Image 1 (cartoon, rainbow, N blue to C red):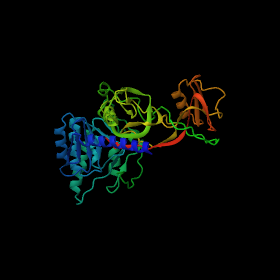
Image 2 (cartoon, one colour):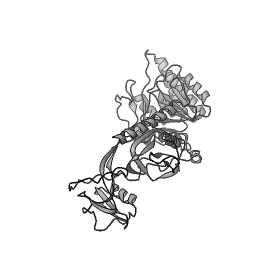
Image 3 (cartoon, one colour):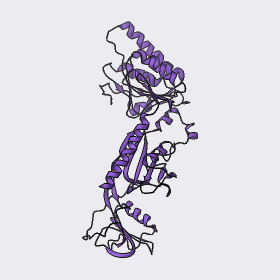
Image 4 (cartoon, helix red, strand yellow):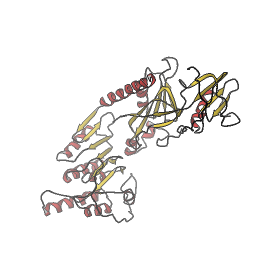
Length: 435
């Protein structure tokens, strides 16, 4: 229990430091627009487009003259303000991006289609214009303005068709198939779209997605414990792009690949995938080392390595293999395009608490021959962790033999042997936003 309390305290310290650093970032707001002056390539819109929002955008542009991207998350608002902002985006040749989990509806769609490059990962929706006072002349003028502006943006004609067919009290959110068929995503150099005709589904109302003594054990045959997750980190790229590589990325790609969350795990070691190892004073310092290195996607800090006795902070390009280790605190950086971190469950053999020296576990061998690939105690332990049928292991040091076991019986004394048994463990992430 003391070890668990220590992990929680250390993880909380890292979370607090990240929160303080995030709060201290040079953020500026202009109405619903937000700018990080430390990374002024992007202007973020979060909120409705109201009277005065177009002026707010002009102020944001003055604060970030080198902006390349507008990130959109808005339920819409005033048509006139939306058209003014869209015109500025078009004139500046800015890119537009709707991240996963965000929405760009109604008047916000004008901003999206103004992008020199544009990409929708979230929701994009359109409908007819609406007004509190029915004025046919004003409505016709507004429709004329919309058609004129969207034509200048080379907006696919199918978008206009869907827009004017959808009643003002409904919202048509484009499906994945429509986004592809209408070429709603656009990169610089793409030829004018020749859209594949799709008959839009009838409009319907949509809601926006806002080491210990040898234990006396009774012979047992435990059920196989789950194997540890493979080293292949499926949702993560092999490495973050280098500064030089970033120069070849579009503004959208660069923004989408930036980490926006850090998931922290106490008692979990990320093995392998190291890009650097350094000496730091504590776990928060290790986290900051990773945050300051563009190629770092994960880290592990060893709390038992005294400062000055060798590296205790290991920076990684991905999470690698997983190992339960009470001396470890690990962190994983996640981007906007990656799913939220998951709680991990697997059978672990903690090298600090679950190993017994000069102890043999007789019988229950998974094979008549020792595991040939493991010539070290560490390799033998990890071979058992990764093998779903393995419940325990014995490593005979003099012979460098690794015996994987399907169960645990009555241990016996054997000089030079080291044994360990799997324990089901759960590792829940603590997540902090880096925005």
